Structure formats: C-alpha cells, structure tokens
Image (cartoon, rainbow over all chains, first blue to last red; front, side, top):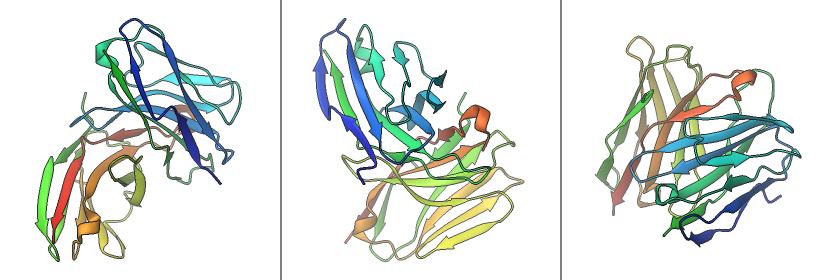
Length: 115
Length: 115
C-alpha cells in the first residue's frame, strides 16, 4: 500500500516555464488536496477535490490549475512559473465517511525552485 | 485572514521536559482540531485530534487541552524525547462535505528536544 505518491521529488524551473506536479493515491479516497508550504507560513490550501470531476479553489489558487479525471490522480499544473511559486508542494487525501473526521494522508512533497 | 494562530514559532526543551504549543482560532463553527507532526523531508502526519465537545484528550505522552470559550487549544508533550524533534502544526476544520472538510493550518512550531 503506497499511500499518496508525489512526483517529482525535486524540480528546478526557469521563469515562464510550465510543469505538472503529479499526485496519485491508492486508498480509494474521495477527497484530495494540494497545499504549498513556505517557511513560517504553515500549509496553505491551493485547490481541493471532493471527487472525480469536481474541483474547487482554496486560499491561494492564483497561478495554478488542477483536474480530477479519476479518483486516484490529482495533478497540479503551473502554467507560467514565477519566483513566488518557489515552495514545497504537498498533496493529501482522505476518505469521505459521513460526518466522522478522518485524517488527511500526505505525500512526501515536491520541492520546486523557480529561477 | 489568519484563522488559526500558533505560538511559539520555535521551542527548545530539554529531554524529559514538557513541551507546550498553543493555538487560537477565530471561526466558532470549526468542529475538528487536529495536530500534525512533520519530520524533515516528509509530509505532515496526524498526531492527535479533538472535537469541541471534550476539554481534553490524551494519547500516550501527547495531550490536547481545549478551551472552547477562549477559542484556544494546546498540545502538551510530556517527557519530551529527542525523537519528538519535529515541526508541529495545529489545524481546524468544518466537517462539511460541500467544503471538502478543508483544514486551516497554523504557522507551525519547530520543536527541538536536547538530549
């Protein structure tokens, strides 16, 4: 059971380039999330999805896009990379089980530098 | 708008001591308050969580104290060990399917336990 898998682990981009951060989970979780983590700022929610075909913006969506064509995959796309997008990106998932709170399971992150 | 505020930003404790991290929240509709632990190079992982209908929850050396009237909650780590050295995040959420049970995180506390 791999859990939440993020690829790549590290990436350096030039300003203006585009790329897709991949996230896959094998736990059949309905909910998936993308966060960015900056030093001293905690984790900020970029986008989230409650199921295949359904996505919504979080706190800091500008400059990013997502899609959710399957339950397993939730890729995050940067169209025109900017230095402000240098960060560590985390993908997470959790099951939907009525009103019981379930923990979010996180991947190990993608460390992205924009130069 | 910062809805969950965490302090201190960093904390140094001697082995065997008590580590205390505090959080305050603004949204009185939050109904789930987890603490996540993050080691370097890894994603956050759920440590312990509480709902607002109880004032305290204990799991081993870790205790959450919750004060609903003050809109504050704290993590206490008893008999702190060097292996507890990590970054700790408090969070809060509404368990609503329409909002994806999104978590709002505090800024994080870097805990160092000296041997």
